Length: 201
Image 1 (cartoon, rainbow, N blue to C red):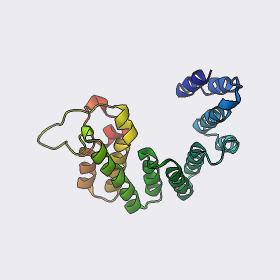
Image 2 (image 1 turned 45 degrees about the horizontal axis):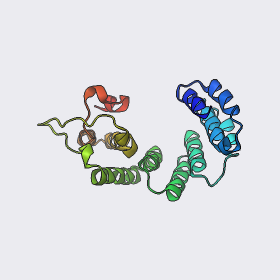
Image 3 (image 1 turned 135 degrees about the vertical axis):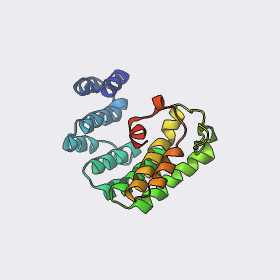
Image 4 (image 1 turned 180 degrees about the vertical axis):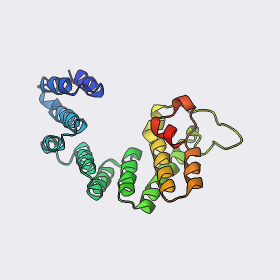
């Protein structure tokens, strides 16, 4: 029942996901189903209902903290969101997707220097811990072999980091810096590019 409700959520069948989550009666899954219902409300842009559900979750659970951060972000309260994402990093340890979210909050507040600092940390960790992703191997003369769209690439948040870095450089009228950020991405074929990367090219 749990996996079925989660698959309905992923498919965008929100009402069905909610109905199926309510059928899960086992107490050990209560928090998981609350999070799923909160996710549904978030996807439907019903932020007051989302917050009401998140308020029922265990408050010191990192997932709850992240949920509050996302709610603050959606409400354009970027500094409050940033603080919650930092709290989540404190609870969970460094995670690239959370570091990216901190950078995105700084970007939204037009604090580009702080955003670039956090993006630089994501890239530096990617270079150090994942040389197989060939970061920075693209150049004008040779095309590097594609690393594909692996789960590892997704977990590193490198594509998001390079795209945001390019956007910041572009906003600062540093076109060559924006181009360099895009060229430093782990190499992928045109068919493998996500919509944002394709647009930025």
